[in-house]
Length: 378
Image (cartoon, rainbow, N blue to C red; front, side):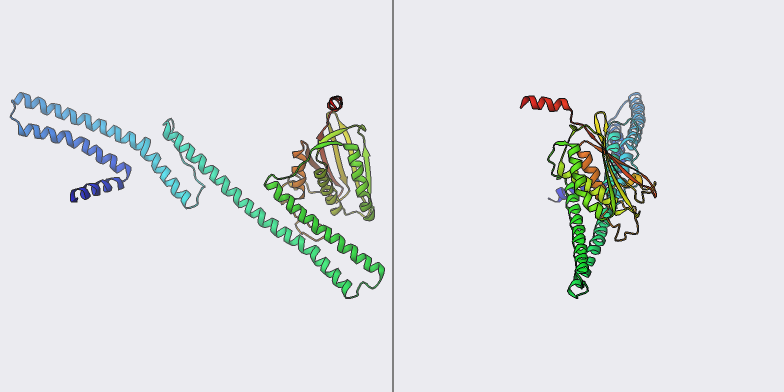
């Protein structure tokens, strides 16, 4: 039992040594063992001087060859295996400490060791990308909460104020009472819009947007949309211009409910940023060979050139002041872009500061040939 414990204790000590020390120790053993056997043979047996001299010379040459081979193997193993493993060990230590800003140097043309180092560095890069993305998402979520909190407080404060005015008798005429009720109603609609945006945003992140694609006569669809928003625009002293240059039988494949979200969001932004006494909103439908162009143009304050490339990014807001008249969650246009692209379209914007903004949307046509085939099948 005692021998066993000594044996395994020595083995445990050997295992605890670093790899380069183990290699050097085995190298020494590899040299010392044959030398020891040779010495025992020379001492224990009487030999002729000629024979013993030959054996001594042979032993010397064997020791030289062992030294040369052993040194070569130690150097080779140290450079090709021990050093790369040491670099990987140091790299894992840095990752353990949370540092991902380094690079694992891979030896050239070392087969599996080179692949191992490169794969490890690729893993480090992906971990870094994931960590950066996590930080960005956390920052974006905090910004979203901050934005939504601010935007929810504004209509809630207004609703409470005007409701208190009604209860305290401040609205002492039918006209003033009607105005207070309308303001409360509009602010409640703002709350509903924000809640819907949040609900839809969560669906985008989890790819749970409910689509129900169908054939849409785009002329009829946008005519209905224009009729629906015209009364609201008129009450805000905004002129609506509807221009349709499409054939009557032009169709696209889209989800009418989600398309309405796109139109409402774009027109809502246009209304929000109109700064002229006489506002103007123009909806144009144009033919573009195999596709349909939809343009929604306003004469608002426009978008700065430096902000234009980012307006469809989530949480982006060009109005830093976040005043109540232009407040928003910063996710509306990202939702618009998602819906348009999911329906096979594309969207972009052009703008001139002080003159207005144009939202351009392009959708593929649903060809008449396909319609005729379907009609024939029916």
